Length: 82
Image 1 (cartoon, rainbow, N blue to C red):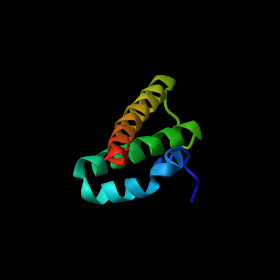
Image 2: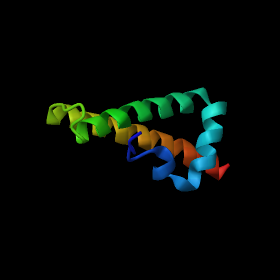
Image 3: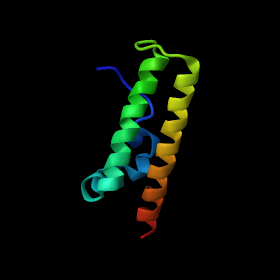
Image 4: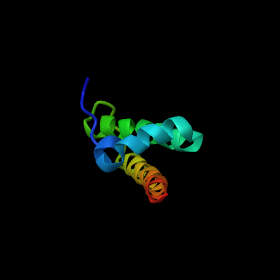
């Protein structure tokens, strides 16, 4: 199995436990994580030329990944503040 960069636990190691807990207790958070993982995998496949795509499409995926990561981080920050 290949190593896919930008996994959430790698991006937010200080929130690894919260990520696991929220995935089971918050359906919206779980959907965001699932969407992030899918987009991240697509970006990785494009970057490694396993599934090449047009540069514009790859850029759009990166923007989507960033948007999802920002949403996830906002939830994690809010949960940590409680």
